[in-house]
Amino acid sequence: MPLLLDDFTEASEVIAARWSVFSDRVMGGVSTANATLGWVDGQYALRLTGNVSLEHNGGFVQVARALNNGAGRPFDASGYDGIGLRLWGAGGPYFLHLRTEDCRAPWQYYSAPLPVDGAWEELVVPWHECEPVSLREPLDPSRLIRLGIVAAKRAFSANVAVARVTCIP
Image (tube, rainbow, N blue to C red; front, top):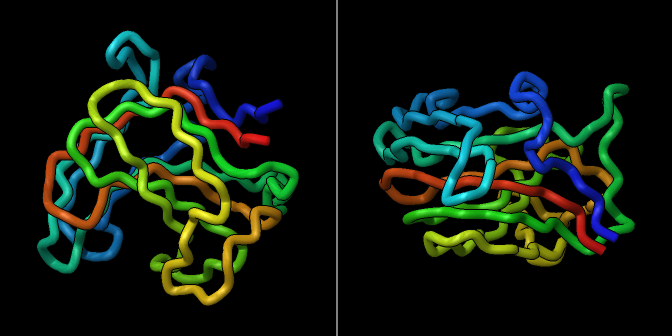
């Protein structure tokens, strides 16, 4: 049975407290990002929009949520096979980024592409498809601390929405 991480059905202030939006501006870039809750092609979802710019060594916008519990311990998803997403997107490229306790620097994460084509899709990202970026070790799903939906790697107008996030058996 999948473990529901979010389906965006709670009050908007609860969702806003869990999810945050940011861009490469935290590192000197000039990309812009915005996250909103609302209806996207018939589905209530969290939508990330913005302009991804490669200027000033930039190149990303992201919406992310912490996965560690209130006591600061990582989320142990080792009993699951990966992440399931109900996702819609226009343009791209988009990625799933996962961070663990092993990710000490902002440029360290585990990444998997999220293929979208302008329609709602059920995507499954197995742990083994999450490639380490600036890390040597493969992803350890017992040490998860953050999950992000990211628009990156080329200049474009980002428009991606997520309606459900689960851990899949």
